[in-house]
Amino acid sequence: MAEPHGVRVFGFRPGFVRTALVEEGARSLAGKRWIPELQRLLDSGRLVPAEVAARWIVLLASGEADDLSGRVLSAADDIATLVARGDQIRREGQYALRLIE
Image (cartoon, helix red, strand yellow):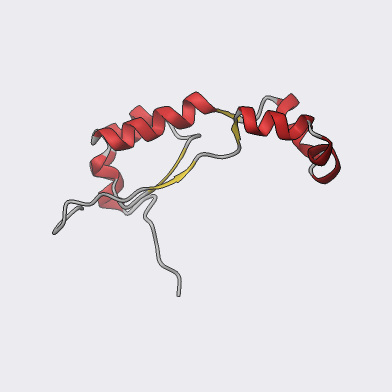
């Protein structure tokens, strides 16, 4: 819901995104010393391609997913399915951002 100011808020968890910076960090001497598991992650193929994270951000900015405002979304989720289920997700309170005091 965007009332009264028209602002939409999404929590987005892209996961560990494969970028040139991450790849360079894995190759660097400091990266090998301080985060040696980084190269193993890169080799595993489990990192999220930057294009997937970017596609999510473009979708969220486009307004197409506005029914999901106030939700925490993940790059591992299927975009089209979540958008199609927007009404149900809102009704059932799924993926809701929550404040823990």
